[in-house]
Image (cartoon, rainbow, N blue to C red; front, side, top):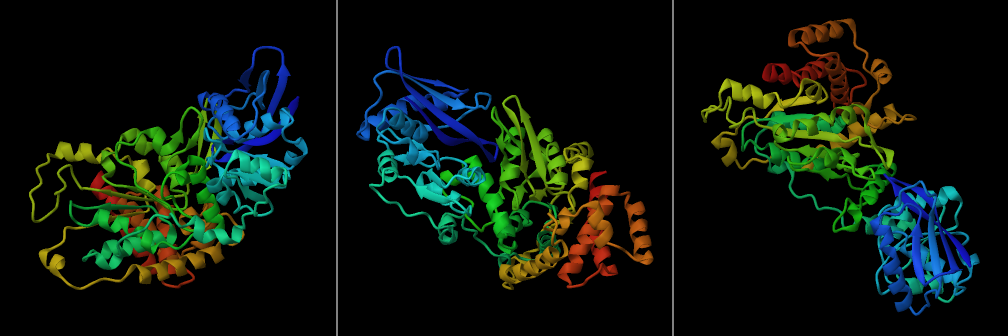
Length: 514
């Protein structure tokens, strides 16, 4: 007998329709034959499903059984087909009626006992089920919680194969997961952000630059000797970032779910911005994304959040150069033999570095041991095009002993966050009706519209550009930062003090790197 169930395949961060076809009663020795371009993980489903069906009190077919995952050209990976294959076997052997599954999309991994385990891409499967017009979505508990955030579909958490069977035949009623109750539960494992800006000693210029960067979503480079507080400040940036909107939260959760981050330990949590801090030994593929079947990398996992690269020159040159296009476009396209995906990656880059290999160039308390050649080689690891894409460059000088001993505290993260939230609110109103969410993401047309300068300020900017020998890309960056400074000052247009401060944040790139 033939049984056909609806399931899904995860391609990048999106789910694609897959039909699980199970045919029993074929001539030949009893065996499960898997076709439809499965990978090794899918092929292992034969053993898991056989044990799960038997241990759940059902009977396996006593004839050759063919399982086809259609369409055949789509590469299938992972254990997400265990549950639909097992239910398909029950339908094909007439232990379960097919009508009960007609309006369902099913996915889930099975243990040998028949219990389910969460799978990647629950939110994407919820969106697929809604687009297909399916009434019900059956997923394991953790994945079902994510999928329930999609409105317009009934999502049920399936604890085991036996529970799925009894639910489908009407013996065991399950309550539909309510999406409005999920915000606290989905965020229960969100990472705890420790530290506060009030703990930062001195560094008023750096604190101001970081506030500007967060208020407009700008990229920032912190440059200073060891112990100046660069990493300490960068790690506290999440405490002053505005909370994401619901749409942004869904995008964040969708990417993390597709990458499997929400399945192992504390995840990003619903309503929290992600912070990714890859080590400088990270590979190009891990940073950008990819694999035999393309998937999101660190830059996509930092979508709507922060990507912190400490000791920037220590990263491989090739790894840094792959950041150039994503920083500009806010998305990355990854092509492999198994397919091509486009993943969003609108992140805020926070980078920190020393001024030289030993770290003490320009430090009045330490002698630099580096030769000019070593210093030049060290700085040359960061290319001009990459540097142009970083909006703010700020020096973090070494602290004096009096500053370290001072008991005075600076502004708290809560006070700074209120100002950044107010600036972001102005930007949301400014860009209402467009896909732009912050000043750093303005298009050229939006720059021309919202960053108009009077003749006097235009001449001032032109003079600064010529003296500092800045690129045309830096021109746009200065205007974007100046508009953010105007937002922080609750001004409707760019004024002279905003423009001068924005130019100041670009003065390091040519002087220190060329």
